[in-house]
Amino acid sequence: MLQRLMGENIELNWVPGSGLWPVRMDPSQLDQLLANLCVNARDAITEVGKVTIETGNRVFDETSRGLDSGFVPGEYVMLAVSDDGNGIDRGVLDHIFEPFFTTKEAGKGTGLGLSTVYGIVKQNEGFINVYSEPGKGSTFRIYLPRFEGETGEPVAENAAEVPQGGGQTVLLVEDEPTILNVGREMLESLGYKVLTAETPGEALHQVRAYAGEIQLVLTDVVMPEMNGRDLARLLLDIRPGLRCLFASGYTADIIAHQGELDAGVVFIQKPFSIRDLAAKVREALEGE
Image 1 (tube, rainbow, N blue to C red):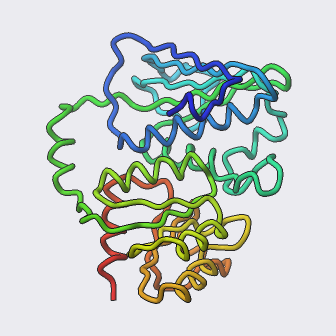
Image 2 (image 1 turned 90 degrees about the vertical axis):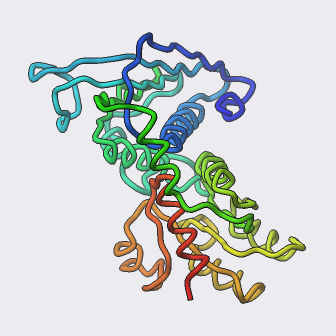
Image 3 (image 1 turned 30 degrees about the vertical axis):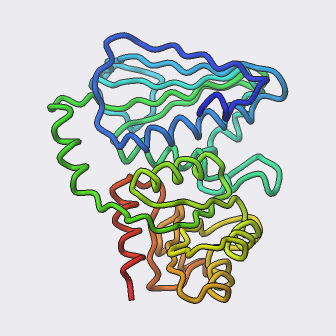
């Protein structure tokens, strides 16, 4: 999957560490971390280049320097993604994890990729460091705390509690391709049939052209052409019985305050785990 995201002109190198410690996090979140960081690295390379993924164990104490100010001393597993692209200006570095901040051209993304990465890392009690110089490329290093408990049994036990779908069709609307792919894989693993659209216009076409029944639309709230609320209204004009689930990197309160979302709708905040997604999809499908 990652090589497909990179394209033909970018070499993808894998440098795995030996004897990696276990970490405790949702596998789908790890997929999302890697996909977002690799796409960010790809977009930093003008033509031909190289992206390197590296893993390893690291131990930090109180004397460790050059780390995120919020780090806690301890044992960590490192995941690093490096590129030999354009690099990042110092003035830009201070803002790269802010939601909606982007240096890409209009229509090329919402700027939520790195803020999603940051949210996943913090949700899993880790920290992230970025090293970059203009013209010399960038390295994003993520540190996730070592998990000391038993592995395997708790995951299987929790997996049994995740509500599964029954073959219903879900239209997933997301303008960030990496998040779209991860979301599709998560929904399919839960037992749903998935249609995808990268733009509101494509979503409207899907709803008009698809011959079968569509039970649910899961749409991002902030998109280039129109917001998710306005898209949902147009989709409901075409298919009045359609259920709606909205997603955003912002909280529901902030989105509602900005006028992007009506109160009382079913909402899921990014980044989300497969368990959270399963529960919210079920809530949206069964809602009155």
